[in-house]
Amino acid sequence: MGALNNKYIGILGGTFDPPHEGHVFISKYALKRLGLKEVWWIVTQKNPLKFKSSDYKIRLDLAKKFLDDRNIKVVEVDEMKNLYAIDTIFYLKEKFKNKKFIWLMGADNIENLHLWKQWKEIFYNIPIAIFDRPSYSLNITKSKALLFFRKARIKNFLLEKTQKISLPMWSFISGPKNNKSSSRLRKNR
Image 1 (cartoon, one colour):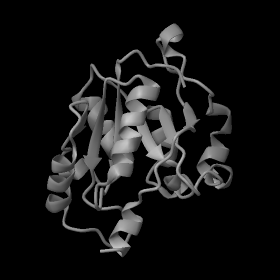
Image 2 (tube, rainbow, N blue to C red):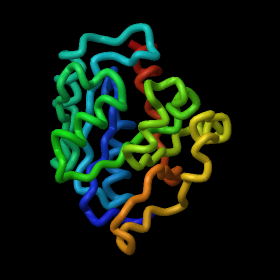
Image 3 (cartoon, rainbow, N blue to C red):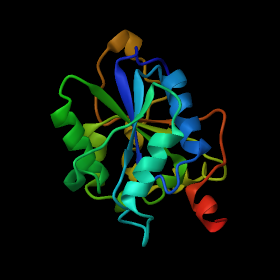
Image 4 (tube, rainbow, N blue to C red):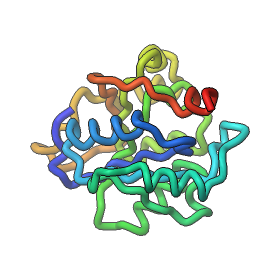
């Protein structure tokens, strides 16, 4: 994936229950590999596809304390707009009209992406970078959402030449991986 000219902000949303080195790894790799200006962590109230999450305020505070890179920030979103990805995307685009965003996600999320609220609208409203995660790479072939948008897959974001993204657009980012997982960390508590 080519550089995005330091004009784009990566959005990494999730429960961050708990935040861990894997989140930081994807964020730092996205900054470098995609040439992003910043990465914003959006800590969600809860995950609609999971039964239980730790207290939101505690997770938010932990995420803020966890970061040590000035280009990675926790950004709080209006609580009515931070449950579903599509609502968060619309909120950010409305509130920060002069900023450009790209959605960052791990490959562990793509198998169930078609279950997300208005999942097709996500593709039509923001470019998506999917980062390889150990043991989840095969999910790319199982994803109903990625199958639906198979023609929107690109090998490289060549924005240094085009400066314009035509949506829908997504790319699978391979390279170094980190096997940290919030689910495994919660099980080991």
